[in-house]
Length: 340
Picture 1: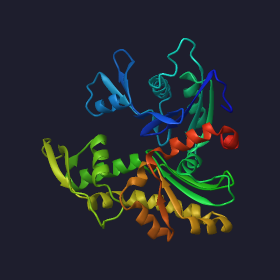
Picture 2: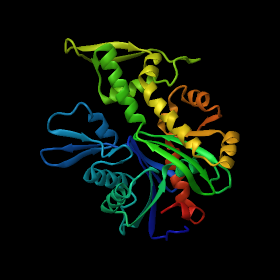
Picture 3: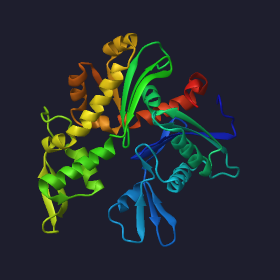
Picture 4: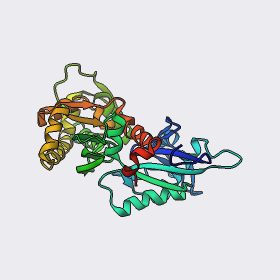
């Protein structure tokens, strides 16, 4: 088993702002929203993941739904610890006569600080992990996409998750230059909520904004195959009564324009810092998109138009980072210097 003995169990975890994915034995065994439901009267965890998400925005004053990660990093240490512990329990690997020693590889944003990194490590330790290793998200995404990161060729990865957009140029098993910005899926949702409030005088929640973004979200205002208008429900700001309104993709493209421009600027800045030989490789290879944000309609076209480069969307972009983390764990001897 390489690094780990028979008596150990190894997990790869993509601890994401929006969703957390756990890989065990080369298979995705857990894919749950990164959210916890807390009973405020007893201070006990009621639910984690999908069950907790169903309560979001619909809870009473005795229940609180908490997202432990914000902007790609841990914002609530205690809740993150509970969430990681529950995710590990869901795998059922510890339910044995002699629970195995648990060792984990967790992917982290490339722009994470030492304090934030320590918070991730300590949360996993408190949740029961005996050994924790870390790998940067852009590197994990590149491995998950199928790029041979050890070769002397430059590849640009743009991983747009829930909390951060990670842009990195990778060559010879290292990150040559990178940019991490806190403009991603959560900010897109806030943009949608803000647009609906200002343009339609309707207040919507996070879940509705997410549904709207998925249903008719777009990065450009002209699509060859546009989605149908989406019936959105919310509260009228003027009357306070429930209200429904049809929203089309052009409106969402307008709402997201500023945030997408920020991602484009980060990509251009990273390209500007790329050594010329690697820039030539990127010209040949293009840019690779991963993460849930890459599923936004027309985003690849918009980035291609801005950079004049080919843009490729990863297969199953939502799980590219988790898949790469699992591959790095399985082939630890080959990728050991990428994992710290």
